[in-house]
Amino acid sequence: MNFPEIETAEFEYPESRTSVEYVFPELSAVCPRTGLPDNYILRILYEPDKKLPELKSLKMYLLSYRNYGIWHEHLANKILEDFIKYVEPRWVFVELYAYNRGGIYTSVRRFWSKEKGDSIEETLSRATSHPHLRSIYGL
Image 1 (cartoon, rainbow, N blue to C red):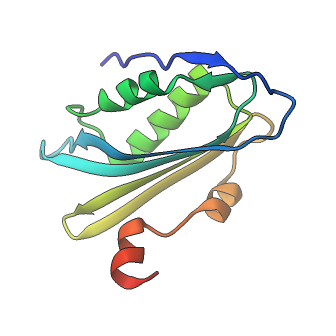
Image 2: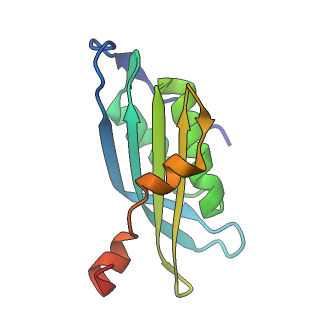
């Protein structure tokens, strides 16, 4: 499937050390096995270098998954890799929270930086509790 490009704008403060966070609570895709809908909360935390994503195009990109069959783990990785491709951040952290599916809450996370590439240590240090676990169990 061809996904829309994430359009960008120039970041006018590339010398700054700015972090930006986007939270998209309406991400949906389809389970590739059952065809049933999966719903997610997506969190993207990053440091811009020379570009910013144009938010309407980012939203259109994310909405394009609505009828696409993909595993949770693949979805988080594809979003991160496409974000890197178009936005070229200094670093980016993606956290994907799946709503309860078959009695299982799932969180998928990945951290990447220009300097060091993937880092499981950074991924785990930035991880937060699944929002549903916080609201139900106070974790």
